[in-house]
Length: 82
Image (cartoon, rainbow, N blue to C red; front, top):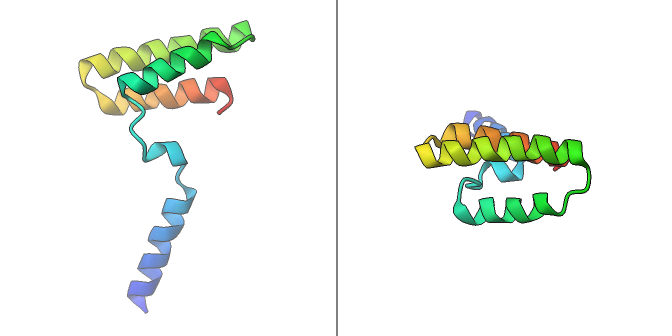
């Protein structure tokens, strides 16, 4: 019984985690994709905020700080409305 409730809790936690959280978004390929998406944005305010977070994410990626890179990438996604 205890194993079942532990397994159920684990499955519930996975279900509540954003899909992108499990994915590595701090890659050159994703940065290129983000640059392309930002270039198409028409709302200047959102675009500026997104670029700020994307630039910080890129800087952290170059330093090798994956946690900080992901934090800023999540903020960039939020600024884009994702």
